[in-house]
Length: 295
Ligand SMILES: [Ca+2]
Image (tube, rainbow, N blue to C red; front, side):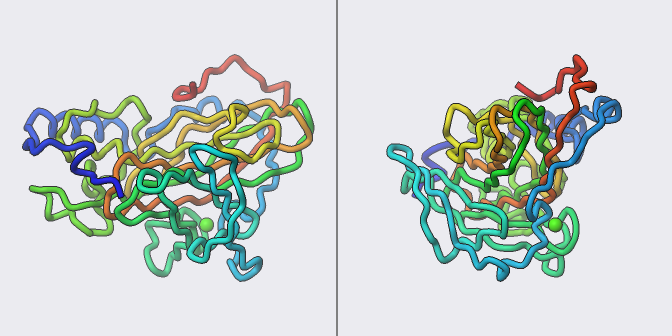
């Protein structure tokens, strides 16, 4: 297990300047401030492609699937059956595996009846989590497509990112408090967060990165060079969308990926996903827009 203290923190007290900086950043980004695609979206004609169980409402019992793609940092990926990974119907769970550095997550439904803030729509979302360990993983699904089609993928996600930090005992283990942002809903583009400083509270903003990706060739290895990933986003306490990704398909199938990556072995590294949507963008609407936040 990675010792959080050895990786990131110096016993330095939070400075007033950092607290002010964090407050300014949070005020600027708001709860859904990761992208400014609204104007572009209004000009697009988007044609949905069916994603099986994209809203994560299906009962796990429909497939009773424990399948997971394990991706060693060296060696070939392989499919395993892991009992505490309740893979949602239509999807395959995946994770990078380097024991002690990148560890196996657990997966299960998140029910609105338990905590409505974890669900973007309907009665359920999906939860992927590690306890006092880091993870780099998510879900994938391969869909049939027409070669040469431009696809656009979006999803909703957020984290509960919580651990014990000196001076912030009021946040420890509190379900609607994430280290770095407190009780605020936050969505900050990767690269726009305050730089790492050794201050534990400020640095915690960068713990989680959510992103979506597409392999336009239909491959299922999330580490393959053919996967095109969108820009990451640090999202906490409430659902928001990391930047969408667009690709042009190269074959008759494409694979969509959801990803959560944690920087540190926080006690509660909980990632929630909901409402995955895939669209085709007709050629007539290929306008010279540039997606802010896309690489
Ligand atoms: Ca849902």
